[in-house]
Length: 337
Image (cartoon, rainbow, N blue to C red; front, top):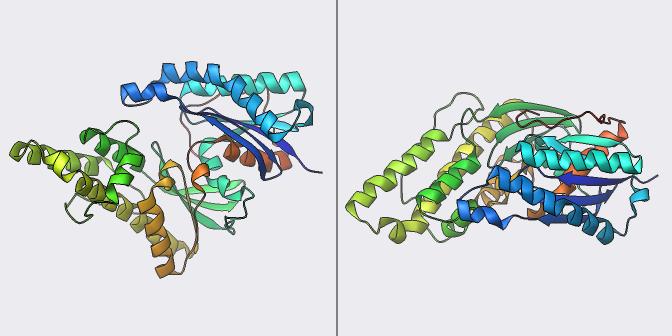
């Protein structure tokens, strides 16, 4: 019998609802929050208020788009964490109320696991990783190398000890005076710039762990020093700055990933998280994979950023194990896989 799952994602500033039948997406609706552009970053209180406004219309659209009635759903999966507490509370509370009203079970989902399991969304244009595989999970808040042995068994073998790669992109954008969100703008500018134009400090962290705080500082000092010589430096060299910063971030990410792949002997390599949308990272991973003999798996752009389809798919695997949550479940803001 096929299983219909409603997925709800509300960990940060995007309200999303999805309907899947087994691993096939029937609907994946996302409502963004433009209000944060005025503040240069996500304002938690504004985010939670927007979720309250968006969640019912988004779920209603998902049900209509999927041509599914509430009584045809078998479970509701929701993001429990990590994320912003106010945002998570909106999704968690709605999921609990919806489940109680319809008499179906609820499934709590770890946001980071869901990013990885997005690779198992049924899509003819995407290959599914074979177990075990390594997944480089890169977002604004997390940078991890995760070994995945099955849909329920994850082990972090490397992670950032301070800032995430996404933070480094956003910080560079802010230093250059680019509007929020800055990561996509860095990516766009980098295509027009010289990636070898500027030398930036690379972190020297042992093992598979990452660090990006020093790189952010190196970029800040470079721009500060050059502005003293020429007030128009940023505008004149904007593309070169973006390309140089992107090159170093990508090199650091792939260097540790390559070491982990070599040491574990795992050649199935996946990419996940919001920064997986970066074209420089995607292209570099494909090139590195071809040279190393890896089988590389890169998700569609639609499944890299926060979305409920990945929550629903993660929920589907837990549904098969009857791994349900109770009505007293509460969200968490920090947590590991």
